[in-house]
Amino acid sequence: MFDSLSNRLSDVFDRLRRHGALSETDVATALREIRIALLEADVALPVVKDFVNAVKEKAVGQDVVRSVSPAQMVVKIVHDHLVETLGGGADAASSALNLNAVPPVVIMMIGLQGSGKTTSAAKIARHLRLRERKKVLLVSLDVQRPAAQEQLAVLAKQVEVESLPIVAGERPIAITKRALDVGRREGYDVVILDTAGRLHIDEALMSEVAAVRDVAQPTESLLVADAMTGQDAVNVAKAFNDRIGVTGIVLTRVDGDARGGAALSMRAVTQKPIKFMGVGEKIDALEPFHADRIAGRILGMGDVVSLVEKAAETVDREEAEKLALKLQKGGFDLDDLASQLKQLRKMGGMSGMMGMLPGIAKIKKQIEGANINDGMIKRQEAILSSMTKQERKNPKLLNASRRVRIASGSGTSVPEINRLLKQYQDMAHMMKKANKLGKKGLMRHGLAGLMPGGFRG
Image 1 (tube, helix red, strand yellow):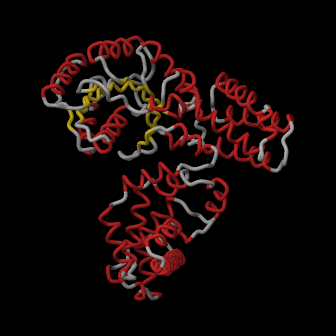
Image 2 (cartoon, helix red, strand yellow):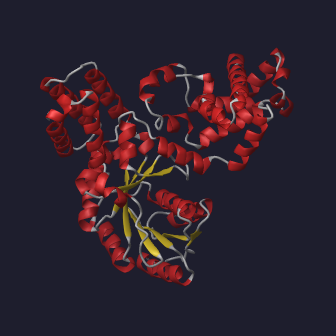
């Protein structure tokens, strides 16, 4: 997400940095390009106008002209205003889910059919169970879409929370009342209501959602919107907010939208915080929305905090400790490499991790040129899976005929196997060196070693 906007803004700021001092003309040219970049990213025109005017007001002031690095000052102004537009600053606290109510806290999911409501409900339930240690009940009120209730029951099992038992023929209001009763009697902390959607906004949809709202009295009414629908998502958000009252937004399919205009526009138009972003189809592909971190990603500053949080959530601590022990004894085999690739994939793969690393936009072309991507990780995992246990334990066994057999079994080529083995040798050598430096050495060299293909920036 935001790739096109990030690339355009990066070019603008690179040109600004070539000037020692900035004239008003330099700033005006930069602002014109920022305006075009925002419009191309599908940001709503009124939002673009307000954004550029606010930045201009600060950027042409004496503080910028007199600052040690005028270009950096302009970047800071744009960054600060991006944070403000995305709902940071004084509004930052509102981006967290409001769970400050008498249990069970009711969260109502609303939106159009196909926006990802049901999956988002399950993802949020998982987030609440793991991060907030809450007992969650998932409830489907969608009696329109075939098998919608069964779908939520399956997802509930996947995220290890309970779902309300299905009663055939029961209507949404009756289901809501039963869910609230079960929630109170059985000591649930949170009840998540997944309401029905329609393919478009109509009176029947709004009436049903309003009736559920009146019975449930939700603490949070979360509008789920598909980021890829662009400007239409803004219209949907406005309609639901005016009629139902939205407390927050969940943006889905963020990973498929390189423009990101919906995020900037929806927050500005509705004045409601974006609470979560769906960043993939997997059940763990959900990120809490932090305006300052997203602004950092847009401007190529990275998001190391989210990267560390993601690592803490996905890395298998026991496996990591076993690997650390092996490294201390000087052992690192191809099984360990396979384990590292698996952990990298769990963290969102190369694409997910790259977006969070500072300055990555600068070397993105080099990385693409080196063909470092998620497809490469999968191919490397296929190669490792095609080896025998003995070969993974002792790579010296891998003579020419064995490499031909592995290439055939994994659907790859011998040169790819050679590159993987070279990467492994580099990593093993680096781990030995780092081990001599102790824990600090391992930390310093660890991330570079994970880069497929032995890439170094």
